[in-house]
Length: 308
Image (cartoon, rainbow, N blue to C red; front, side):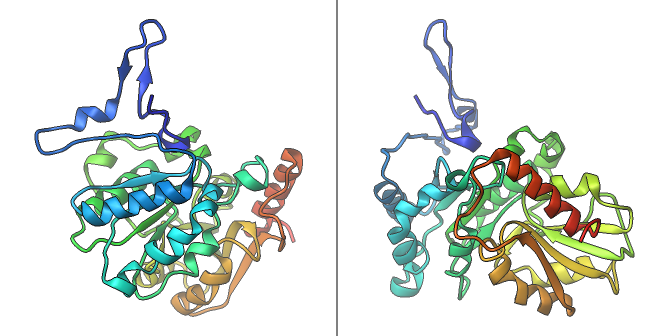
């Protein structure tokens, strides 16, 4: 049985009456296109090393490895550091492997919250990786489609929030999937202009921020971390001249994108950028669901300027 993990538990269905199996992805198969799903052994080092090698030897294939939780990639850190991040620079060895890392602060505790965004961003240099945290199904789809079609392959790291599987505003229509392209930056969907405050964020925290945002606060999403979308971000901020700019993240201040992204944001928007996050911590997240929700409420209020 191809169980899939958080983002792809729909990869194969089993009829409980007769045991027959059905995979909706198989509908995409043609004489030229094959779809194969495999459950790997519980060794991130071995499995990711195999997928990296397969992506190098079969560059026409979209090769995807998904962790059950993003932090499970810790067991494959040697493969990530020595091959995925540095293979092209060291050996001119190109790979289009995709790593799907479920990530999102949802009250599930330290080991099930963070895919360690900061570790991947600090490996980024010389256009060696693509690092993204898409916030909609359409964005995610076009990101994968783009990865399959690009002639110059680069490893793609996707942080994929688990709760967006059940968050209706993140869903996509058929038209969203059959038209359009991947957008590096998404403006506030309410069409806010001339905002007094712009909150920049990425991923699922957007869906916590938007319902609470006043009419004069714009919430803008970065769908791509690296290569850093400086021009697209600057263009998005043109609609809000003179606005205060805040970077909001769910992760502690010493983790997540903040340490890496802050100087790049300030260069792109040509103004100071404040950071709103959880306080610096040795652990990625609290183990208490109640405490998590209290922290999240404070985070949202501070980001929107509704509380100090």
